[in-house]
Image (cartoon, rainbow, N blue to C red):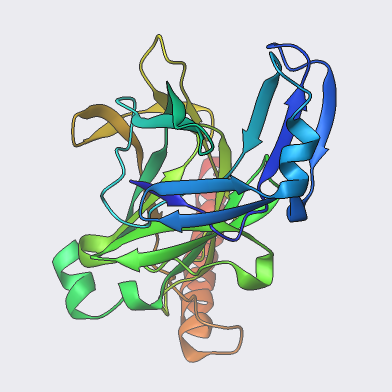
Length: 288
């Protein structure tokens, strides 16, 4: 579910201690080369790089690289996590010596499962009338202070990065009014409706979505501060925050001066006049 980000600039550093608190050397780009082949990255030191680290026996090397979550369903979403297994083969080509180190870091990622509804339409009718096609949402990360960019595949939006408002991906409901976005962290987000179908009220306020997770507990979510259910994905029972956004039908009242408005006032005036006359007559009768 993850691949190397080959455009990322690798950092190669040497530390005096295993806790990585005392850095003694940093290798520059001319000190090593990097090649990729599938899920294997090879770092080869040049002569200048070898000279720099040759005096640092019993030191610790720190290599920083980047990997990205693939924009498809190969990634494991939800609280089951995506195992990121790393095997480092350290080899001295001069004498054939090599050593192997292994480590694992579990990467977690979640999603939102938004259903768009219209107050007076079933999902089937809304689809037939192509109402969903006129709706647009954007997703904003409150922590990153940036909008979500995503790629649509098989009816699901997969996050590919953070961008400015102008570059944000417009999230359009798919089959059944569903907007499913996968690849977000457990964090705070807001959903804003930019456009909706003609004749329906646009959502006035943004919707705040928060996903919480710790490795020793199950994931949970809130929408505008209220707890919501999380739907499953693969082996993860809690992977996507589930909520619904409903647009209501706009009913236009007749404008002042329209015949309908005048008729309504005229009828009211007659009724009120009748009431006044009745009161006067009753009053005179009681005096007699």
